[in-house]
Image 1: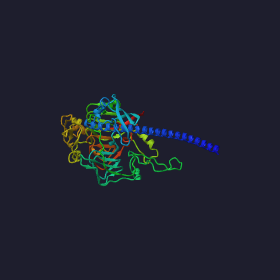
Image 2: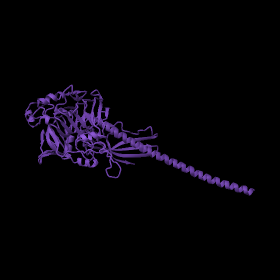
Image 3: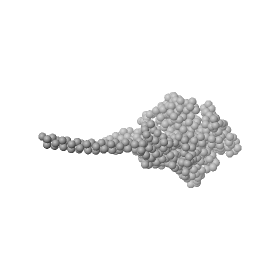
Image 4: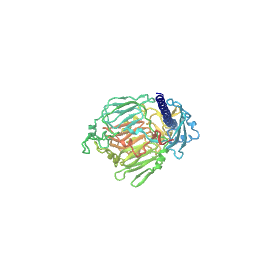
Length: 551
């Protein structure tokens, strides 16, 4: 029995030793795994902190620069603000994160520094940021190149955008596209809006962004049956049907197409218009892209043109545009036009008569191959007309024009508003309030300049004398078609007949008087440009990360 007891004790001791070894191994492995888990957690937290720092700096740099950009009159030379961020970052950005912490990551801190600024370019500016984060003993960093640049403004997402109160009063008004006001929007006599309606809160105008009155809209079936080929497509572009014969019904979504609804969206935030201040950016753009206007094989504008210009296209000799061009004075234009590009005028753009594309875009409705349609339309004519002054339609020398239009171009229909300081050269800086330049809103007053014959010139008039202007301008009632995306710092005004606008109207004030009816067909290429660039007026783009590397 003693031998048996001794054997049992020996077995027990061996088992205990084995269990102890296993326990120690298990605990060691558990501790090791726990340490690895903690380390992985710290690595993840460090990267989160580093990303937080990048996002914070990217956003706050944009906010600081945006404020400076506005005070400088929204000129592209303001982008030099970024240039000394490497040598003296806290001068421009006193709040740059240095050993900053995040409550959700205890024991962690992060620092962000500007390591490089692309000095070779004015616009865009590429800024290299290094964000380093520490969580206990773990350090991780992220390097990113962030681009601050310009992009076509979102005001071109609408068939009609007015930087003031909007009003559609008349049963003959139809918009085939979204419309927006940077103020209240008013409707009367049931106009048709085949798109969404936006009103905006605007303290400067005392506007709450209300949308009042009644408007109509078409269902998709009626829209497809009634609109012409220049109107935007529907969404979906085709009704559900078995397109390819596989027994499955297909339909094709088209994000910017008309969906058969007209939603009212009151009390929206203001949508900033891009001031056409100093035109140097667009002059440089014209040189970079070799912008031209030709007619009959003759180059009329090579990048930039000093003074005024008259452009009258015919079937035999259409106006041909390629890229962006800048005309320092007035642009007077009508007739047939082809190509793709934009014309910037340093003062007014006067549309003297019908302005028609030679090669129009078209959208069939329904459409079983919208991608192919977009590809074809990408090659069709597209013209942008941007004016530092006004866009004026028709012969303003006629008593009928002055009686029906001019009355809407002064208070109380218009109001005083802040302008760009560079507008002083064309008369709009009339007084200052809190150090900011203002225009009193009366476009019918003399602008301080003179016409070619030495007579006084009103804001809505061209620099040509009345006799010559009348000789080339068409009867307003005969103006029935304008193919263009138009933009003006100030007023879009004119007298037209039964009228179709294929493109968009973007302005501060609007005074269009029509006889019969008026239709606005939004050119959705202005919104979904893809790889194309039609050189429409730019606004500040949100910062975009061009390159990112984790270390």
